[in-house]
Image (cartoon, rainbow, N blue to C red):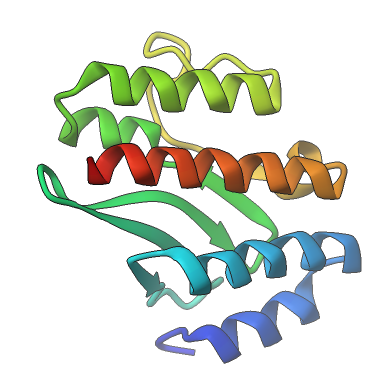
Length: 144
């Protein structure tokens, strides 16, 4: 596959992941499809990616997270640190991620955006809903 789209992404996801992981990623794809200002699909050969993007009047298009057909997610907090000058927006996103996942996302410990296995972060449907709420909040803040 040279280029990914929603159909090829979901087919590969279902073929390569356990059902509970597939369900989590499908929820995130569905949410992204409905709420993102822009969705981008990867172009790589090994696995597919989907990126949730938000349009901001001040900063242009900002990517908030990636999910992969391998059942992984990447929070693009460091990418945002390079683009967004309002530290309170970044701090809010960081605190919500830390609260949702009980992890430390400060600049010293989280100095590069990395992929996490979806099943290690999202154990219940409410975990997915809390993350979606976090993305809704940061999207709203970026549009102010």
